[in-house]
Length: 185
Image 1 (cartoon, rainbow, N blue to C red):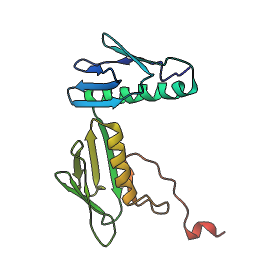
Image 2: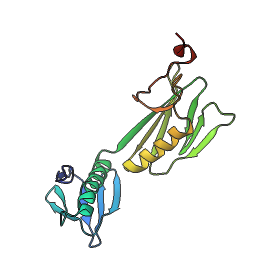
Image 3: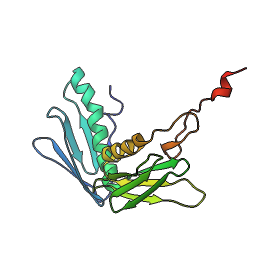
């Protein structure tokens, strides 16, 4: 029994879902349109403003896809109605972040500045206030794309465990290690 796959998806006002004969699911909402190809065996039923995902048999392959496709469709519904936001914090002396349009410029302690092109589907904003760490905010409707871009930005300067410098999500806990003095007794 798939607990996630059996949950229903409530469609908010203004969100429409279309399913083609080839099981191409298209979700349209106030923020945009997303589509996802779903396996041919998975059954998608829409009754009023409730969407259910069902599997035809109890085979291991169908069980594995049941919860996956329900989650993907739910993420599309949430994305086109509310959107997703990821906030990154840059911690370190002299570390900076700025953007011009969809080009992100980062100074992360290397000998050169890093320029990164952000996809057009994502809205990016940066904030550098005096006395606070630089922030990078990503907003968009595609959860997978935002997570991928955020992970790429994090990988440019991973958080190191001794001083905690680097790029991290807002509120992320980092395990700190004791330095040289921590090993002596």
